[in-house]
Length: 402
Image (cartoon, rainbow, N blue to C red):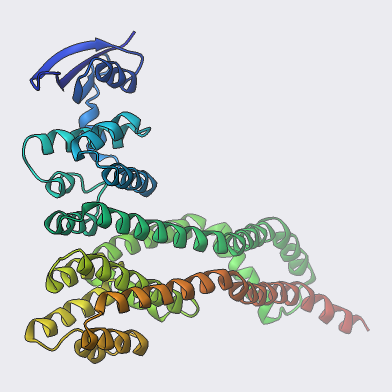
């Protein structure tokens, strides 16, 4: 049976190091917990794999964080102390990486640091907005309420992404099938017609010449085409990771037909919901705007929020600088202005997010029906091009023969 070395806190609160035999690292962790130990690090003696390092780098799924948050809310509302909550959640966690993170958070809190500080050590699992919202909940003494809001926000984001993926599935299948069919025609059907036209020695129409040129490029220079395509994809990904590239790509996305309106609505929903969550948690408005600007999910909107924060700092309020940006929808600005004047900003932000939640849901459901006509037209153009390229020379031959 494999041997694992471990570092753990025993029942007396003392850190101990030893070895244990177990079928896997999870089994080793369960074995240690069964005797009251809290594992800090488990390393395979056989393979020399440091699981602590591996798990630290592993990306945690959003679903794992949502489950953790929901379970923590239930336990806190039941009056269970935070450390006991974390102990129970670590024991129940199915994901080994998440279990390891919860253990580390437990140890950090037990050593005297705050919950938000302990979370900040694990950026692969918890976003900046999540950590700062927890910090606001700790300061306001409403940690369970803040966690519940966070869970709702993450669940909404997850459902929206799932709906978009579902709506795009059918169009993507059509595009992929069309691409495969086009490549098959170019590789197996077009060469036979090219040989036939070459033997006949007729003057070929423009569509046919274009088709032959495409076949020549694909068949004779496929390695260049493939290299350029791969280089373009890599270059695009590197460009998007730069500050200017990320900003310009997000600007392009906002101006896209169909998708631009959906992205704007989704971003407005996220902006207002996040700001309401942070503001109602007791976080100062300037700090809340700073966090939202970095986590709203769109660099262009984020920059405008940063400019709005400067206006708030000057005493102009939030609605005035947002109106000056000319990017935020009038309804958002109007309701924020009413909320500021009436002292009910949180309520107005929640109403705005609710409105855009409905708009996003409707837009996502309509996405497939809006895209399919475009794909149908594209399919018709490609079929028409292929038909003209292949059959026009035949019609010319028929007319000459007659």
